[in-house]
Image (cartoon, rainbow, N blue to C red):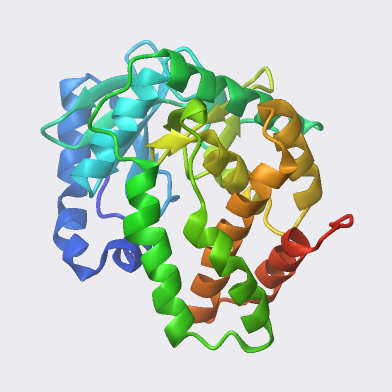
Length: 304
């Protein structure tokens, strides 16, 4: 057996889910051992990454390297597996086996090693083309009616928490900037013509590269909704604080969504992020305010 998860892994998941996840973390070695025995895998070691699941390396009898992933949240497990299966054959990590009773899946190990391979020189353009392909799969294939909707997420989570934090967080010199964005945030509407299965968690660490230098998306938080949301998330967060202008221009060109359409989505996500960073005293708050100010400028200049 793998033994207990690391103290750092335990800390990350407790921060994410709360202390109630401690009992589940105690069962993880048994869950992964049962999955490995069921699928005749040799277990390796924990891959100590992520904030919402536990990951370990494994190998098949013929030497194929895999990752075993155990989810604390059954809904997150179900939605992620559903989306990855819908995108099968596209730019994602393949799902090899699933144990619904254990909440564990065996996943392709990109480039044969945790973390994938080297990033190509034209990374933004390469990732943008792959994201467009992912959205195409999400539009053309039959979607599960059980996947959550972006509309619900906007209405029940993003807008309420922005309003709550606006009342409780000291925005200091950025108060006027935030207030100027509120009207468009409240009227932000989706375009049904762009509806697809979204990834919604497009941080750089969730895009790995295979041995050919092709992007492979992992760890989605899938929803069904306007592709503009994914492009805005990628623009703001993919390499946070760096080359925002390049990603926005690339998104508009590849997705064929004009910058004036994408920009309000970017500002909404940046405002949400700024308020979160301020509430948690995160040192990235000034950087996010800088990104938000650039996105709000009448004629944005070039960012570093």
